[in-house]
Length: 143
Image (tube, rainbow, N blue to C red; front, side):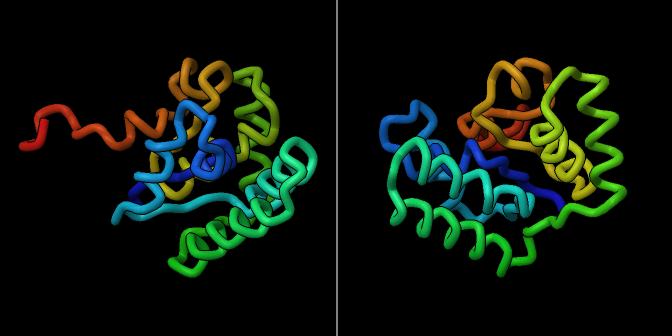
């Protein structure tokens, strides 16, 4: 696969109109580019929607979004090889195993990771912001 690999933060931003990345996350999800995510996203979005937002309906909508990505063949499931790669990445970059799992899965899928996690992923060159994913590639006709 080539395309965009979304971590849970992008999915959450698409649901949260107060998030600075909201409009870009929505455009990315509504676009025609191939999208993928990790099965971990089901748990992460549900956790935030229930514990931080106290919004069961948002949890359902977000899980539906992930299911739609899965229906298009874009759901990556954790397996021993992915978890081993995530362990190495977590140790190398000093990031959580959760973040490292998204990095490892995106790499395995030959996709670019998109995240709103500036401190742990974007600033380290491990992911791009949704706005950057939407920007035309340098040298492309639209650039």
